[in-house]
Image 1: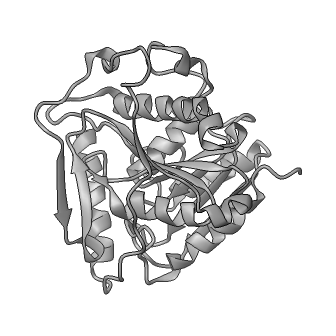
Image 2: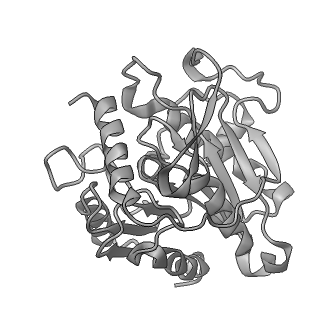
Length: 310
């Protein structure tokens, strides 16, 4: 099956897996404190890697999924939306930050469901949060392994670290988080940080793009088709960041995906936490009314332990 068609098909399956549940009220959601253009900062004037561009304007449109969400596609100007930590909780956050990659089958981005609602929640806990609006494979093309998305993720990690003094971020505690296809992107960024996916453009690209930790929520595309093992493209070793993984047993994306990632981490003595929920389907963000509704509490506990002396 064509890779791009399969990606969209799995994303639609995820919608079908959750739409039968009564849609919950949408979580709190606020406007970002700042929007940062990935490729338009400093002296470099914004030419995208490899001359990449889309045709036409960016599209933002609502859908009826999970009580109503906003989707984004046809992205040609990737940005980070920054949510500063709640001032009353800043001490609890300890300068930690998280870049969030919404999912959407590499076809759209579930912008509020798996992006701004997550950032609003995390910033309320005292963490710095950025939502990454990353480029998607262009319609009618076969962009290699979603290269543009990985370029944006690597650039985002370096850019956020380069601004750590300005924001108050601890640069040694910057993680990446992703949902569905965004989980695949977060995993790629966590496994391929030693190999910059584009030619360095400026001093920002001299800053490390290695995530300090990884959060994968119903991540997709990490096991090969019809195979329960990790795709050999994704190599976990002793330098791979620690990870938190959450998945539902009835997700149309097999729960072998996080299990294999978790087992590979443990084989390399890397701290990891895995939750497999009995039900919940796919594509729910913070809105699940089934067993995965507990994942945010489990993640909040896990985040407080990151960076602590072992």
